[in-house]
Structure formats: C-alpha cells, structure tokens
Length: 356
Image (spheres, rainbow, N blue to C red):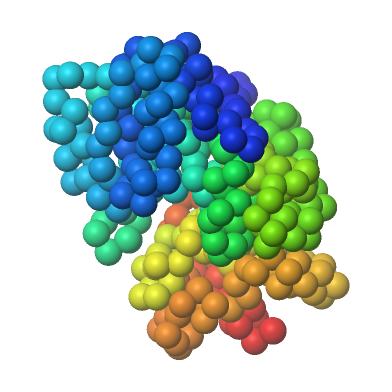
C-alpha cells in the first residue's frame, strides 16, 4: 500500500500575507494565532486585519520559544474551553510544530505561516519535540497535514541568510534519503510504501536547489525576491516536505539523534545538522572522490557545515565522535539503508569527513 500526504492548500508569493483572511474564511470563523514576540510584531497586525476583513475572529497567544511538552500543554490550557476552528502558527519550525500539536489537542484545523525557510516543517503533519536543553525527546503527529500553508516571500527574504542556508540543507538531503529508503524497502512517515511521486519530487527538489542557489542568494543580498528565490523557497518548504513525509528518511536525519546530544552542535539549526548528516551518508554510500568534492563545493557556496566545528562543536575528540555514532546508530531511520550500519561505521565516516 502506498500513501501520499500533503497540505490541502499551499499559497506562496510576495505579499500574500495580506490576503490570508480570504483563505482562513474558507476553513472557519474563529482562530488562535501562536507566534513569538518578534513574529507577533512582524506579522500579527497584518493577519488580524485581513482576518477581521474576512469575518474571522482572531485571538493571539504568545509562544514561549521552545517546543516542549510543557509549552504545548500551557498553550492548550490558555485556549481552554473556547475552542477555535483554526490554530495558526506563524514563525519558524519550533512555533509551527508546536501549533500542530496544539491544533490536534484542541480539535482545530491547522494553518502554518512560516516566516523563515529554514526547514520543511510547515507542510508536514509531524512535530519534533525537544526538552528545555533542545535535546530531541519525541515525535508527535497531528491528525493530518495542514489545511493551509501560506508563505509570504517578502517576509522570508528578510530573514538571515543562515536560516535560508539551513532550508537548503534540509532540502538537499531528501533525494539521497528517499532513494535509500525505497531501495531498502523502508516505510515512509505514514508507515506505508513510498509512492513514485515522492521520489520524483525529491529529485525535482534536488535539481531546483542546485540550479537556483546562486540566483536566490543574490536576491537575498538585495532583499528583493526573484524567480530563483521563489523556486528555492518552494523547494525548501513544499517539495522537501512532500518528499520526506511520503518518501521516507534515512541516515541524514538519523544523524540528528547523535548530533543533538553534543554541546554546541545541539544548538545548530536542523537543516545544518542534516546537511552534515548527508556527508556521513555519502561516505557510507562509498561515493567517489569527484562526487564528494563536487558536494563540498556546493556546501561552501550554500554556506553549509563541512566539519563538526562548523556546527558549533568545541572539540572533535574520540569521545565526541563515539557519542554521535552510538546514538545515531540506534535511530530508526538508520535501518532504511541498503545495509546494516554500525556505530563503528558511522564513527569511521565522521573521521574521514573531519580529515578531508
């Protein structure tokens, strides 16, 4: 059995936030907006005005900054018995993932409004939960993918290049993971066989990222979205999200189990962690020197990490490598590979990457 999951509606473009009310009105009449203080200042007035014009009643709830079970429970308690038709999360991946589970626990439809393109969380139905120290502690699921994903590229382009770079990393890895997952007979996020549609999207995602990076980064430097920037954002948010949920994950994401346990590295952006994880996966795939050099060249152009130090590691001692390798080897995604992977395999791959 194959399963393909996707948002009901995806809207992207410069200035589209001003028309969000029209979109919300097709879903319900009441909504709660979850955002941190910065994003509230950036976008809440626009959302509120557009919602009011469309006849949608909006409440605002501040997000505490970290996606933890305590924060989810706090927001659900704040909503109380006055349950909204919709929960809207505006911001980055932490805010958006929090909103997914708040929506689930309050029986509301979910709307994601990313203000950065650092990962593909906005389109998916899963949420990665951390503790207060940003150590990964669980994965939760909403009842379905978002009803609406609205991406205003006038807002996205104002975010630091580091965040866009993380989105590039998260998108870049998908084709390699989907190919491995399918080749190993692994299951996708829905627990089903990966459809060929997901593989096609993963390949298109990779090609789009490689072809549009330079033009998109030039647009970012000027602060004006162009066709390349729009394409790169679509790859980072939409293509990447559809590819990973329906296509499946492998080593690159499995590496986050170990990387998130290392001081310094734990605070690195998800997209940068999985980009480093891709280097490990490519080493485990025994890619030739020419392929690895081409990939490293792209990493440099994309401002992606090539060493653990680039992720914030204070040291790359044997004990650090062993910690990463041991925890990562136990990750479920590691089984979606064409052979068994041991902690020693991972440690050797890391050593080769650090020595390159």
